[in-house]
Amino acid sequence: MTRERALLIILTVAACTLITRLIPFVLFGGKRKVPKAVEYLGAILPAAIMATLVVYCLKGADLFSASHGIPEFASVAVTAALHAWKRNVLLSIAAGTLCYMFLVQAVF
Image (cartoon, rainbow, N blue to C red; front, side):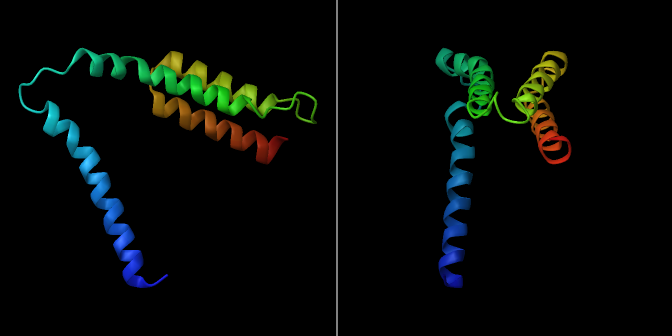
């Protein structure tokens, strides 16, 4: 890949990212009222994303392997407990990921 092509790809991705970040401010900026549908999505999507991540993480857990799915289920428990305690999605996901990686790399 040439340098020009790589630069063009980077600029395109940067422009698309900037546009998607600016759209909410353009649509809902100022004193405009946020539509009920957007408020609903803002309230329901974090829980839906967490549920999707749990299903995705546990779909490959093999209960009959050497670790018996312990790293997966322990990490989900850490994530759920931390989320119930702190109510911070990013912190919960990061801690669950770190727990899983530690268990897989160092313990099992």
